[in-house]
Length: 449
Ligand SMILES: *Cc1c(COP(=O)(O)O)cnc(C)c1O
Image (tube, rainbow, N blue to C red; front, side, top):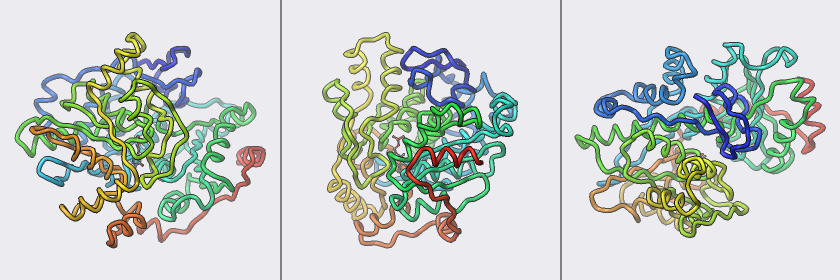
């Protein structure tokens, strides 16, 4: 498979390059040149197939040209060692629980898959130059919480790769912090004396520093990477299969995705292009409403992000917006109006204030006993408001409520149980490297590694 840039001004890349570089030279996002439709026979069988097998079929469409079939199967099976079950919350509303992985949020899927794919290319000997330190690949990732924990756990123990997680001192919840500071081995947590934007600036400066890039092979693991976002399509197919199994046949499914950078919903839309039987989509937002406004007006006006209760969705300029435009403009062939028309005929939006998020969590708990986290609450509410008779609604529950325990306990007046694997992290010993908010200091540190 070849990958082009959404800005159309960079050379075509192969999968290896798209994964190692992440972003194209013209700062565009990589898009696969083809999206193959899955055959009818696959959809006939899908309701009776196991998750890993469904995922392997989907993965083959994207990665089959570039990865040996046995290795790809291994990679998929290794990534999906946990379930993504669909749980009935109301008559026609289902929660797709994406939080049964090691760090209790959906990013575990893409992070693990990317780690294993990068390792596959390293083992082929096709990554990194001799001049760069011992053939090691170094992943730099800035985090405000969720991304760092998923990437650290996804890459834990993967040979040939070292991960540096930069996080803002005192700005990450204790539960999140322990998920990437207690691991050790090939994971180094760097506690920056600054805010999230400072961490991001240090990482970006490192990628642009010639001396550093010659000394060590550097790569990023954020959600724009094709190896991180595409595997998220796996669980959507599996959810549609589960609904079909429960109801004895395919239903008119409406898929509702709480969104921030729009990587997760983008994967679902790629699935739809591959023939996944979903009727329409809803992108649910907190009060960061740039995509919602785009749907209403056709104008995309990024703005500074606002802090909300659903903080993993506090994004004012979603990075995957460019991919959605590229997909529905047929790589720029359609006009802005035609593209907007295509998008609004398939996707609707929703935006909720913190007050509405709290109200929704309380109402759902009172009516159904189901505990929503603030992100999932946006998805559930959008379905409640927009689902039509005859449709079956599925919303992504993107994180376990225990990940946001303090908020959830306070809002619902309960004591959310902490799953054992989260408790394990909390018992671990915190280890981190204190770092001044200064690029020269950070660079000297990396050069000494
Ligand atoms: C990352 C994240 C989101 C947003 O996903 P995008 O792919 O950025 O749209 C939503 N909920 C949780 C819990 C997350 O960690």
